[in-house]
Image (tube, rainbow, N blue to C red; front, side, top):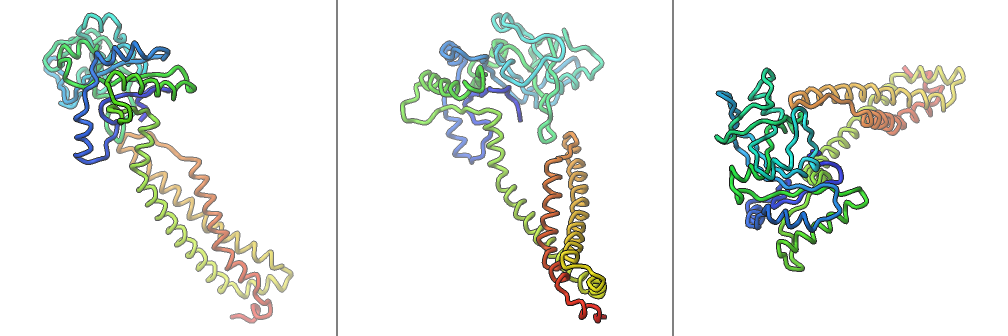
Length: 359
């Protein structure tokens, strides 16, 4: 999800994540596009920032090299120079886009790792090769480092070119421009966002009191939206977990009560030879906790194992959440103590004479 660099936010016509229906999407679609001219005016007004850049993108493109071509889902992204610094991407081989490429509209591009692998298969050096982007010949000047996959989907299915070249292929009014800005520091981050809102409202002539006709988002806001969307699932999982804990606790208590009944004579003998109530209480509490820990360890092993197996189908790296393992084991101890206390108390308070006579 960390698509932007630190202390960076993006301004665009559409929200990063849309959860409403058709009517709410209509509102976003009817907004005025953010044009490249708007960006250049905005750039002059937004002084005292570390980096800022603009980009335009078109999806559903087919990229060809000789007789080899990609699937029709490649995104072609046009950028200004600053856009490279505001995104969490790095050039792996070759060179990056230069100011001269943007100024003169040079027909050059940089390939995402997925596009590079599809077209050249790791056997041909892509640098200097000519590919066709929607039938236009473009020279490859670099390749990008691979990005982590998102839910099993490649984040490398795109190519990057100068924004002037992009507009010469697809037209200046084809897509709204997205603007990315990196603040100088954490301290200036919020004030930079406020300045950006004010300047862009002025450029787009938004009347005082009316809501913004553009969206601002960052890595943090995207994560917040994802958490809001998955909030119901988390609550449901917590309810199921609490019910499972209660069921497990009742099960432990019943097992221990049966154990106390079956070992009544043993308890009587222990008391007869000098065992105190605290000794009997501690014995059965420890047994209850051990039972819970055995179940907890089995559950943790299954959870981590099945989770990582499922994650492997999404090409996610294997991981063990040590903090949650510790929390799980602590809960096991807590459940053992809470639900083992009554059986242990009952065992500790057995009359030794009656216990010895029990058959």
